[in-house]
Length: 316
Image (cartoon, rainbow, N blue to C red; front, side, top):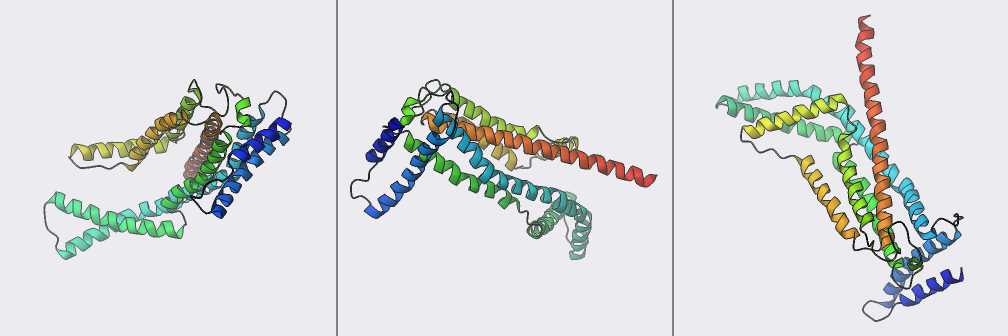
């Protein structure tokens, strides 16, 4: 305990505000806020009733990561999944049912307006007008059902960033000498205050992040797989005709793959305590994705089996 207290006092003395670059009140507020979290973390690591064989600071990092993700990020992920479900199961069936009627309506308007041209030109103009009307109606339905895709994607990311950045800053501050992190090793980390000399944890971080990106294809129903194959064939046909096809999902996946590699490079340059937090958070996110995708797969299979039983019951 004395060693812990002296180390904490040394950290406080070392980071005492100095100079006149910024107003003293601003420096005091900023440093006190960070030191409050760093001191709180050290106190928590000391107070937790951990077995003697458990490294206190590493264990506290893992516990804080799991608890904070459960409390602050999982609810928003569930909220986003519910919005996605409404978009797929309530809005899109309405849009699909409107397609034949909208197509006939646009064709009648074009005939009434006396639109002329080759067959291909008329088909292109007809397709553009139908797409425009359906897109407008889809946006209206997204607003009515409170399931706009933009908000569904952005909100979970926005809610995770403050926690991720804040805890990373606190652990980085705790890794600056003098620090009790120098006295603890964990797995391939010689100390929590220095980088991983073997780069094992940074590589694990990149692989876990990549697995999270690729696992979206692991939990899909047969109907979804068939639909994806049809869409892919349709895209290939358009490319064969010389048309430009923009695939946002592929662009996003390629960017996420690059981010996975980039995280390895960055993780080799940050203190071990920060890397341990990143690996724990990425592992939690991967497990969370697998659990939620598995539950969603089971739910869709159950709905599909019930929809097949209903017509058979009616025929009897």
